[in-house]
Length: 191
Image 1 (cartoon, one colour):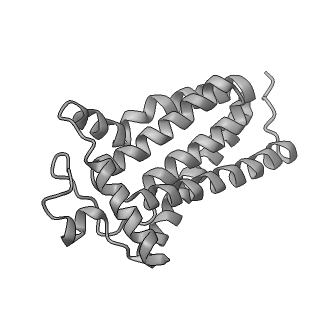
Image 2 (cartoon, rainbow, N blue to C red; image 1 turned 60 degrees about the vertical axis):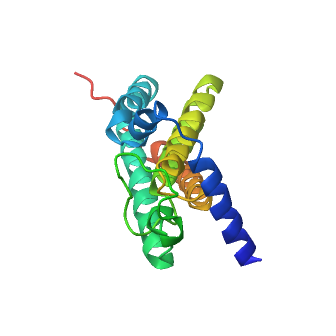
């Protein structure tokens, strides 16, 4: 059964990675970059300031904790499982589509990009609770995660398990955030 799942994952990767075009290469490269998304993070933080006033400091702290936890736990899992990325699989030499000759680090299970984007998405969407935002932020997480398959550095299982990790941590940390702002609200200083 495990061999079947691994082979299915590889076959699905090859199918999805082959769906590439020259004009999409720079787009997926951009979507995969961490600095491209800073305006999104700032927009969510701005919303938090409007909604929570001084408690936006708590929101910012817990958003950072979410990203840090997702990133660090995914890295620990990568080194614990030591599953090579498809870009480092000798069976795929000359078959995998790469952009800018980027091949990523040695190990890919689980995807830190998927964990981070889905963690932030869930943390922020349960806070914002607007349909348009939920659709937008989940679309963003899916596109960023797919870009990793497109770039040839993650299998679909890397993405799926990274997303599950991120969603779980994002929701759990949001619950801790809710408890924290109830027990320790930051009062506005009056002049």
